[in-house]
Length: 214
Image (cartoon, rainbow, N blue to C red; front, side, top):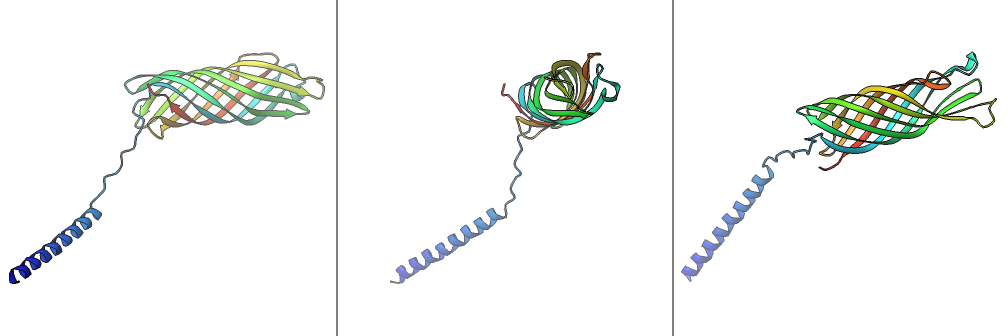
């Protein structure tokens, strides 16, 4: 009996030490420092991409065949559209081509004469430099604008497409490995010097871009 009691006492004492050891182990795990998660940033800007753009625009329109009192007028509006392009790279430098098209309404009205631009697009070259997780770039190229003109003197109105030049720049920042956000400014001017045209077009655009896997 004495031997049995000593055996039970040894088992009981061992169990107490095991339980205490497990509790201390859990406490150590609770206070163990956790390593910060590594964010999956964009590491390579080269390749194809596509996304969506939203822009706020203001412009100065002219109609050279209109009376001087309504020849010049100011307008503003918003467009939403899509963008696609391809980047090449050399060390920290990025260059490529980009195209976009947007639809919305930017209008100008003066003395019963209305100008409305619903459709607008550009084809541009881009050149920039990567900084950490961002891309600073300049851009230049051609643009087209679909314009509709109506007035109290017109029965059916007048619809035309105008070509122009556009220049600007912006910044694109990585939100994740294949997603970037951008903010840019573009200035546009028509190439035509007669009839209806957009003389000075100012565009502030924001967008989300998805970079395609290679």
